[in-house]
Image (cartoon, rainbow, N blue to C red; front, side, top):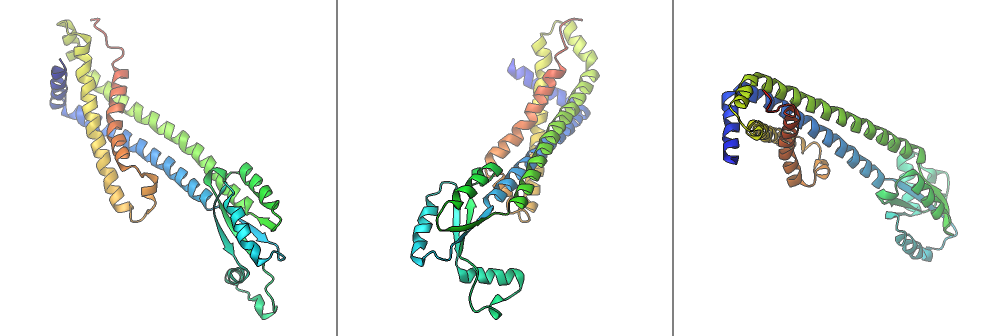
Length: 287
């Protein structure tokens, strides 16, 4: 019976080449739209993680802290579970950074370096949110060697809020795109069924089972969806070949290439089968 279903499904493709091309175009477009939406979501998540991992909190060391205390301070920082990394900036390096950023050399006027040594601390991404950062700053301020804790809160909070807002828009847009793509495939399948109305009625008249009528159409959509997935995969591979050199982080967005390929190939048949089953729900053996 399964062999008969596949045989009839292939016959449907051979007999209705225009309908096959129409369905193939619709499902391919649906797969591409959904893939683009997934890419946008993954890109926004990747950008957010990158931003969070680069959030820097500067802790200035008191001038009266002895040089021998430096190793003790480093050990204390290494024991903090919310830190990803720390960088020590001595007074000399602090002066170089100040001169580079401002273009003013205070050493021409002063015979001493007024800039304090400091640590630039980077947080783990799971702690890079507003509430956690406040707790981190409060905790760092309690150390006896800490003179001042500086964090560009307004800048980072604005960026993070923009990202959160953008992700909401992306999720809504993804949902709309998915619904539009499903409707596009549904309209195509309904158009194909309407063109085969007389053929389906004839099959019911001669006593064909409901599965004999529906399964070849469902398998036809699954095969069409597989071809659509292959086309979408070819387009994605072509774009990756040319875009990978420009977007070096694209491998970080999709680290699991095999999983992405399987998802892309499965998406077409899933969409085709789902929409076809919905389209066939009103077909019965009643004449």
